[in-house]
Length: 297
Ligand SMILES: [Zn+2]
Image 1 (cartoon, rainbow, N blue to C red):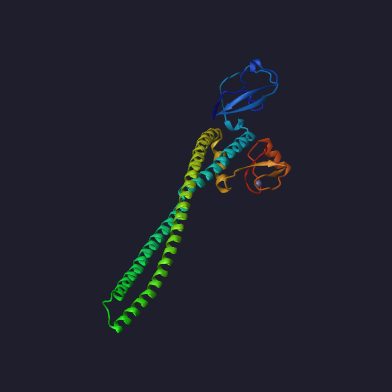
Image 2: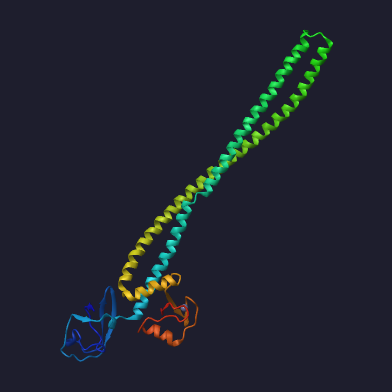
């Protein structure tokens, strides 16, 4: 039983508020929860029985086409909430995914380590070449100092200088290769560092954009939550349960609008009787194929 401040149709009950003064067709506004309904009150000869406050079973008054419309509105709000929630989840996943920056950091770190190794190898090659040069200098000093006079010793010394010069040539080749490798490593490290800075900068811009969008989405969701609560409060609990059950089992879509005698959710054609029943609003009508509640706009 719901308490209604209403005028009721005489076809439903002969208790008519304001009946003493009303004799011709008029519309009366009934309020049930937060919803307003218009009821035609037909020519009615006042009986003298007048009440301004009636206890009347709500189901006698509840207009199901209005109910389908309310559920349709609820569905629109819920579908929008679903879309926004998906977008929120996608943005949160993006915010949590630092793969691009981490990958660029790893590349820069590897390039930096490679550069260090290349520089170390270069220093080593330079030192090895320098060591051979020193040996050559010492041997040549001995050779040209006149301190060695024995021809055999002189010949050996000349051979040693010749061998050292060949070794120096190889060491200098190695030094040159190490120098080229170090330059390449340096260029690669600079490129990797530049790439890392670019990726970090891009990430920062993206995060600012994503967080802004996220704030906006969360505000819209909060506003929709309020709207949903208000709409849901207008719907009888059993209809709401049916709606929620269908939402869960039908991929979030419980209500299907009727267009051109077809269900817009599954595309199934609907019989004229079914469409008429859905339009009349005597009861909730379901698509026979996808079982969703039909709403005729
Ligand atoms: Zn259907």
